Image (cartoon, rainbow, N blue to C red; front, side):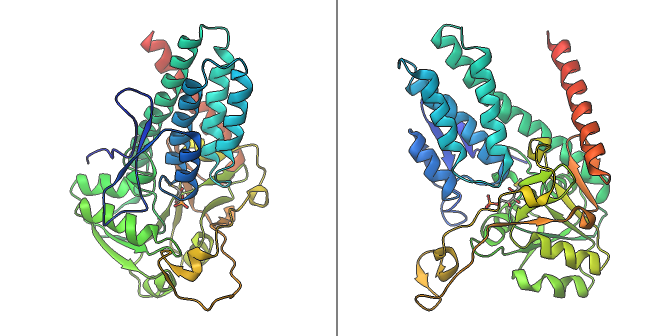
Length: 361
Ligand code: MRU
């Protein structure tokens, strides 16, 4: 699979180039972002979206803010403001605050370096976050490969593919890998109302790779499960709490309930950067509420609902850990008891990266 070119610095390293996901699949448009306001807008409007991709974009954005303000006397205060501002663009995906936290730590660690070297260390950290995401995508895909059997039908929701990350994606990763290795699978993609990430992005990504994909309306999921077409559900994740409750695109928790009823394994996919050990359970996860126009207007272009109708438009929901068969991470498939097994996974990752660092020296 060709790696997506969805987030990168410009040649001169002074702006961020992103693929505008709101224009896909019809148009391939790249945007050059030069200010923190533009980046904020791009995250808020889902031009760059998907938990890992948001984190990577924000990390580069933080570096660009440092570059722009490097001469200011109140540089460090300015960076605190930039962090708060970027972090407020979307509340649910923890990768955003996780990546910004890493950038802040790098800033603090290198605060006494000459300004140019400090800025360079921030660029390197943003690049490291992106490189680690690529590595996690590959490991997640390999770890989930044994869950895939030739000929099976898999249901997915929203888009947890290459566009949402920097490589294979998370939930779509093992599907791409299975396909590359000659297995035949059939993917059912929920359209994912209201912004149609499934119809616009998942269907596009899978078709481009030559994987059989059938697009269904969100409310057809029950029917395709009842007809026996689905052997597993694979979905992404925006934030997993310590106890394993995990948020993903609105509609995911309903799928988990259906999967439990039909006894279909339900897997969520999350790099450890999506696991938030500071949040005890799903009730502590802030659910983003988005503009009513996303529901009342067809892709903001034609009104479908009566003027003045009241709208509730939560963007995510939380799957109770009891309904999750496993959460696939770069350190293996985590099953209950989640807290204990997440802790062990973080320890494995730490030991593995320390070993690689020592080897690199
Ligand atoms: O609102 P979105 O499109 O950013 O929501 C994205 C999802 O819910 C994805 O499933 C999740 O971020 C995982 S992406 C690897």
